[in-house]
Length: 465
Image (cartoon, rainbow, N blue to C red; front, side, top):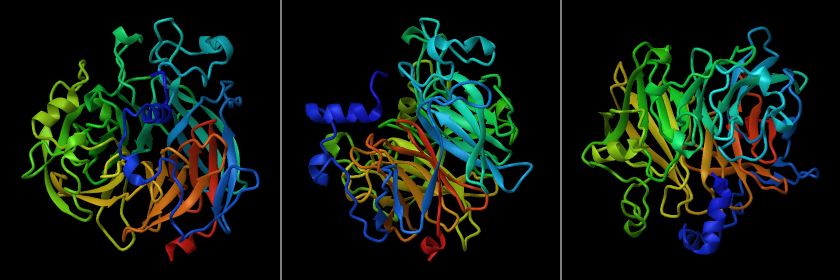
């Protein structure tokens, strides 16, 4: 892809070809309308935060890592794991969303002079000119006590557009390729798969796609620890909500069954709430708080060489969602029910985003309930929610990827939005990869361009209140 998502949206808007919704939101530039959490201006022009909160800059794209490779560009989805040897440290598994034609951000240096250190089994794919893909994953060790980077190194490489993913209960990170490519488009192999990366990896692993989990524009994943079922989102305007039932829970490489969610009584549903003349199911058709009974549809030919998995699933009755992105599993305080939360970045009548909840039911997760929790009334309130994290106190932390100033927003269980951070850097790039340390005291987040990873600390109890 020659343009980033942000550049494509901006250029299309200027040309008058796309996203008519901005005429209804009143502005394309997001300004905060949320007054609950006033933000303090950062004199260093990095992050504006509420009073009492501070940040540490962990790393920047381009620096040399502990293994001698260069830190790849475009940090994106991320998850945090306990360190096996110290409660004062933690491990971050960090994606890098480098696309087929990303011009910078290679871990191999100028002219890819370090590529000879990588075996063919470790490099998933090369481009048509023989140069490597440089999407992938880095492993970061962070010292929580001293608030500093201890080390980072390359774990997965040679993949395309590793956008988000998901943490597993057995200690690995599922890194998801968003860009679907086939050999006739330039690469040597098909792309659009999930790759499992152990959090204890000490160096590069062999890059093995989990093809039974489907080939589509993968975004995020979340695992229900009670069943081992993996739920997945798809970043497309006509996307499905998937689940993968492994043959052996905890061992995804041994295959399984891929299914898509369908709403009972609403065959081939379109949940966007876009007006029908925009290709949606009708403005306001889905109400916040409305609960749907669901069923699951088996999918076949899941490696989908024609990239038509969602189209075939929808024709069979599965529901369409508008750009499913961030997702997290958790149990909110005061509850004993595990829930899966996910964002639809351009869902809603204003195309500014929706937040959904799926609640598995039954001893084997065979059924469940689907609820739209929130729909943005406009970009001033929440502008295109992307990655998502469940906070220890039960709120959802939403990373914006919109058109103007980018915010981290909080969403309370009763549907209230508040500001948690604003990207004050001049590039105004998206937030991504929000996740909490094991003790819940540090929030990690990436700013994709020019490529920063931050650790945020502060009086979280003020949010709990």
